[in-house]
Image (cartoon, rainbow, N blue to C red; front, side):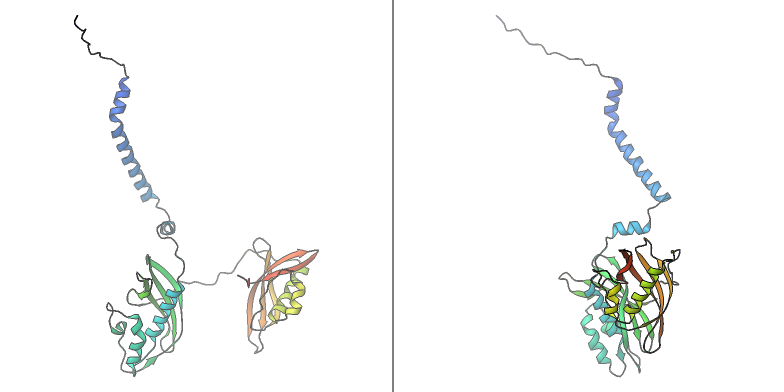
Length: 287
């Protein structure tokens, strides 16, 4: 008996036409959506760009200060600005440790026929990082002939971590500054007992009278006395600092030579058992 031949079957499933179109067109819809999102972001950036300082902070993470690189820049400026035309080899010898095959002899410094210059003091007053691993320091240098000069020095670290000049120096202007801005809208201290304690503390503090000072300090107070003894002449203002846990005292003082100063001190004050005491004066000696 012949085996019955199996016939193929066809299954028909009903699907909604909108589903078929959705599956077929979905990739195109996603691509168009991504393109529209990109256009919207570009338009938003053009109309209201993010603040420059925020963008810079996000693009350039803060880098810890490099004291060795700062000192290197100061040493270079001292050697660069100190010279004697009668002894040019001395200047060359001082600059030699900083130079390399990529820089001119004497860092491009050509001395005049006569004269000399000395650096009285120099220090870093500004720093920026144009690229990772490279700093540009602005060094203020007081010279005996040219006065106060500002010089930028690019400093980088090599692959092995040593310091090196990243280019020639440049004479620049001073960092931007403006008139003094003192605190305003502070509430004046109207408590006479507190004012008396503050004035007594500052008198003993300035006069280096540690034994007398301790009577008005809290048990845990740490105070470092100034090296220059002064006599308190008067207290001009006494105001509450923001938060009113400390006071700001503006005083007039005088040293032994008769030089008078207007000084401002912040004192942390607390009230213990009905009596005002001071827990800190201007600085934390342990910080």
